[in-house]
Image 1 (cartoon, one colour):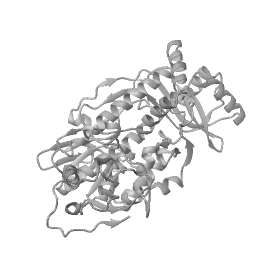
Image 2: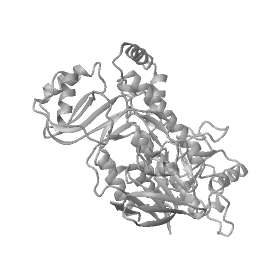
Image 3: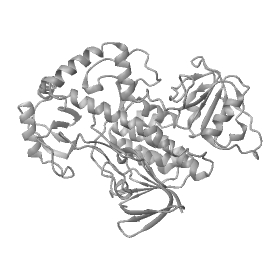
Image 4: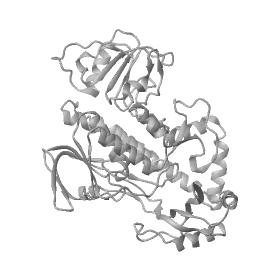
Length: 485
């Protein structure tokens, strides 16, 4: 029996496969498409996703293929500089095509031992108390302990589960594609700069060799968005929006997307779970979708692995929905707000001007940037220290740095006192005695996803939180000495 089947080989599914393999879980990814898509829908990683790549030792791979950009101008395209001293060691956005992100995550997953089967479409599923049976389009049946639907906004898994997907249908639609233009770059840049003073859903970005990524509002909402637009449709909308079609020709690919906003009522039904766009869809404003899915995967991976391994404390897997559902709901709210602010109507434009003025206050600008980049996320772990429930930024230690200690996806007790013990959890939690001038607390317990589960120096209190997040101690293990950083 397979441990975990993952339906969908996009960034969410591939990140989840890698997280599961770090824990030794047998993971099989089922991807409907026979070949990787050439469509580049998402263009970058935000700060929290960059941090996660660093925690897993993947960041150098991504930096080699991406370009760093300043953190700013995310919220509804309102251009403001990043606030000083953003709470991260990575205060930038990494521009990198989604196709490259998927390739790098697929390489990582397969290196760790995950299997990716392309041309494998899930069409049916059933479950009982022991596992899940998945039926593929070719008649193959597979049996697994758990199944995760990472199969996009039109998720087959979600529909087969009968999980509601309430929200709002698309009200506006945008055309997106890559094509060549027949006018000089200076002309393109001048027209784009002028049009974007009022129309933020428009742009032509150079990709090299005369090819541009073209974004332009559609005339209406298509009945079937799965049907790509035509080149003539692009030309018509470019003329309507910019007064010229730039002589566009020779398209590489053409697509469309809407601003539908929906969220699954439940992220888990028994042994089947939902992640990424299968659990939530929203407008692409702020570039949060791919990042939200990657962060879903990191939250879920270690919890699902704990269930498979048998050490998960009661209710651990249910914390996936409890923690991630509110985060996605907040993204839906801020993308709705951004879409309103990008309207060309007089009312929304007046509100946009007011919001722009408010963003001149550093506190407001910082709040919105932390929201878009997800470094402001705080899970509800109850009352306690301000760090509790937040992700821990990377900090310098006397012998290295924090994120270098998190490569294996295990829990981490960073102990500046040298007096604490996590001996009964040595198979799940690393105990590192080291000090940091950037950390003004005696010790912190980090979950595998990097969020702070405990802060303090009381051993009894620590033991209760180790049991809460990492299950019962293994008393048969020989006491493990803490390791230096």
